[in-house]
Length: 114
Image (spheres, rainbow, N blue to C red):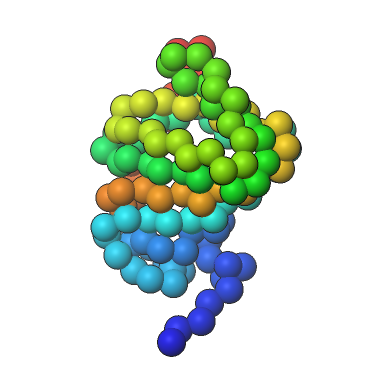
């Protein structure tokens, strides 16, 4: 058995094709991400990756092409390649994020007014 601490990982990412990692693979990336209330996260999309998110704790708004969606603890939201999101964190949020496949450099930051 291998044993790690989340504090040893980079920004909560613990499975993927990067270092440090608890399990190295190109098939996916998995992270436990913490975002403070009102913390900034840019409008972005993934070009080839599908991103599956579980909001474990907190409340947030997902600004997407179709409008704003209020999300709460227990909500699972899936972003497909090319779908953009601008997250807004109302409270401290904890998310488990899975990206399939694991492709470094796939995220594209968008202009806020675009």
